[in-house]
Amino acid sequence: MNPEERLAEMGLALPAPRPSAGAYLPFQWAGNLLFLSGRGPTRADGSFITGKVGLHISVPEARLHARDAGLQLLAAAKAALGELGRIRTVVKLSGMVNAAESFTEHSAVIDGCSQLLVDVLGDAGRHARTSFGVASLPHAMSVEVEAVVWADQPFG
Picture 1 (cartoon, one colour):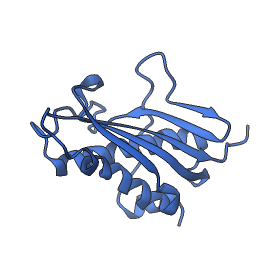
Picture 2 (tube, rainbow, N blue to C red; picture 1 turned 90 degrees about the vertical axis):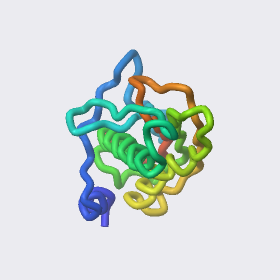
Picture 3 (cartoon, rainbow, N blue to C red; picture 1 turned 90 degrees about the horizontal axis):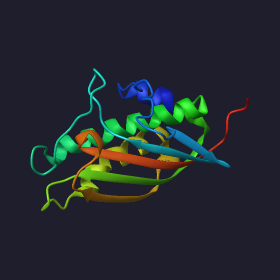
Picture 4 (tube, one colour; picture 1 turned 180 degrees about the horizontal axis):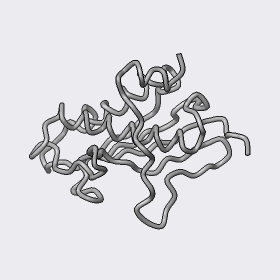
């Protein structure tokens, strides 16, 4: 089963890739490494899901936000690659949590994205990871994730 079929089996669909919100690219190639810019969770209307984890948002809710941000990453990867089956491995995932000062469960939140990558990509989705809390994120997003992927570049 390919990654797109796994997504469908999970009842998930990739969102339309979001354009960059500034003077940066949604992804950049360096050899066979694909660097995916930070992505956050969005609502159906395209607006960002906002709030502070540990204050306005629970850990289970934030895990879903991280999973949604992971779908955004996969959408950017598909835009770069043409198909997710070109991903050989997710090398590194970095996750930032817009957290209350006393919050300490950042890893539990970012696991929402990590688990999605493994569920969709299988062993290719296993990765090294960093997760940490921040005082704020762009657009007041609840979480933001970025990734480095080793992949086969599309031809043309």
